[in-house]
Structure formats: C-alpha cells, structure tokens
Image 1 (cartoon, protein in one colour):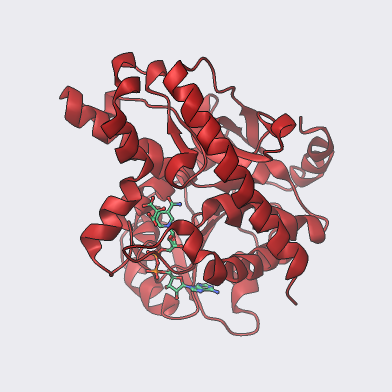
Image 2: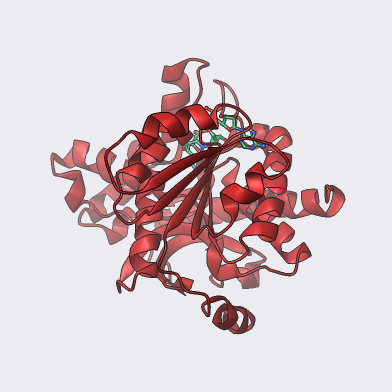
Length: 336
Ligand SMILES: NC(=O)c1ccc[n+]([C@@H]2O[C@H](COP(=O)([O-])OP(=O)(O)OC[C@H]3O[C@@H](n4cnc5c(N)ncnc54)[C@H](O)[C@@H]3O)[C@@H](O)[C@H]2O)c1
Ligand SMILES: O=C(O)C[C@H](O)C(=O)O
C-alpha cells in the first residue's frame, strides 16, 4: 500500500532517530499543559519544545522544574519561534485550536480550526517534514486530511507519519466497559474504528471479551458521544483536556517505543488507510502497528456482527463528507 512512501521513507530514515525531541503546538491550552507535564515525565523524551501563540514560555518554565532529565523550552510566535520549536522534532503533537461548547458538534469547530491546523501543518512541512505528526485538534476527521493536503502541496507527504489521535475513544471504551462488567479497565482492550466524532466512532464489542455488549445501545452511544458528556459537564469551559492529555501522551509514548525498536506496538489511530479506499474513504481509524518509520501495518477491521455492520455504514457516509471537507478547504484556501 505504501509503495511510493517507502522510497521516501528510506531517505528519511537515513537521518539518525536516536534523539527524541517532542514538540507540542498549543502547549499552553487545556490539553497542552497536562500533556506537556506527562511528556516531561516520560524518560524517552529528551527534549520538549512547547509552542503556543500565548503563554508557552510560562508553561515551559513551570514544567522545566520537574526533576526528570529532559530539557524544556518555550517558544513564542516570533518570526523564528515556530520553526525553532519544530526543527529536529521526532514527534509533533497538535492540540492547537478552539474546543467545543455545549450544543456544538466537532464540525462546528471547522471554520476556526481548519486554518490554524493548515498553517501549523505548513510550518511542520517546512521545518520537520520527517516528524511523526499527531493531530488532536478537532474535527480530527477533517484536520488530518488538511495536514495531508498541505504536506502534499509541499512535496513531503509521507502517509506513514501522519496520525489523527483517536486514542481517547479506546480509553473511554475500556473504562465504560469496566464500569458495567466490574473489571479492571486495563484488561479491557476494546477495538474502536472509523473516525473521531459521533456516529463515525464505531466500537467493536463483538471482538472483545464481552461480545454480548455489541447489542448494548446505551454503551455504544456512550462511546460515540463520550466527548459530549465532558462538554456538558464543563458547561462552557471547554471539552476533555485531562483524559485527552493522557491519551495523547500514550500515543506519543507508543510512537517513541516503536521508533526505538520495540516490536508489536499497536495503537488505534486515524491514518491514510487502504481499508476502505475502494469506497472513497481515504482516512480511517483502526488498529495500526507502529514501527521506526511510523505506520508499519494497518490492521484489518476483522469480523463484525450485524449491529456493527450497520454502525459502519452510518460511519462511512459522515466520514466521507468530513474528509472531503478538509481536502476542499485546502484546495480553496491554500493560505500563504
Ligand atoms: N482528538 C481528540 O480526542 C480530542 C480530545 C479533546 C479535545 N480535542 C480538541 O483539541 C483542541 C484543543 O482543545 P483544548 O481544550 O486544549 O483547547 P484550549 O482552548 O484550552 O487550548 C488551545 C490552545 O491552542 C492555542 N492556539 C490557538 N491557535 C494557535 C496557533 N495558531 N498556534 C499555536 N497555538 C494555538 C491557544 O492559544 C490555546 O492555548 C480542540 O480543537 C479540541 O476539540 C481533541
Ligand atoms: O468532544 C470534544 O469536542 C473533544 C474530544 O473530541 C473528545 O472526544 O472529548
């Protein structure tokens, strides 16, 4: 599937990947701050670069006092600030952009976040084209295609290194199942596929230890709309930040483990995927094996039951529109 990119990747992997600089764009935000803290606690991270349009030096000064080995630096939107934050990065996490308020869908964030992500992707394409880019900013179903289009326009697109972060969906699914089954969530490995909004989030309980749950409509709804629970509870003060920071840190850690040679590292993530390309869906979240070159293998969705088949159908139609919207945005608004 990744024939063209393999050639590109060989050239990319010529540069040594033994230093683990991790950059957070949007580091002073609700997700950015706890995410930066968790990354500072990760011994695999040697250098932490924190960028935001406001407040990153303060967050960096604070986090830098945590007594782990990595160095921390904050970057401001000066003419060279963003480029310096990105130069040499192995992993870039992007939680920059506005969060939802009650009554909004993730797609309602598109008008504001699309251009933020486009511009940050442009900076990544220019300053760290070989980095693994982890997009957290919503709507993920559209912001990931936006990044891909920007990288393509710069001639540096490597589909193996672009990831939409959907980890929170499996984190939630395992927690919600454990509440029902009175088990340890660590033992509940739930596959969630599709995208990252409403009905595009498709949990596959038939593949879990509890296949009976695949007909539990309330649980399925809770996984699909778990983000709304938090938005409602925060009552105008934003969306999930702490659980998201944990999920983002887990995804970054998995990429670093794989980059440092560990085999069999598998995470769910929204990637340029071969699984449903024949149906016009270029990006899809499924279990993905990670390796030193990013995506090693996109794992198949596997056997699904009749309920899940229906969920997938509903997912496809929304997802396709979301992906198209992202692509069209870059075509019509290429930016500077
Ligand atoms: N993928 C997921 O599972 C998931 C989960 C939760 C939230 N999110 C999304 O993450 C995004 C951020 O959420 P939050 O709660 O941290 O929001 P927030 O408003 O608390 O923080 C966003 C930060 O981005 C910064 N920012 C804005 N424009 C920027 C730019 N051009 N360059 C750099 N920084 C910029 C802001 O200054 C702010 O500090 C939202 O879009 C939200 O919907 C995604
Ligand atoms: O719900 C949101 O808007 C934020 C995030 O995508 C989530 O799933 O919590």
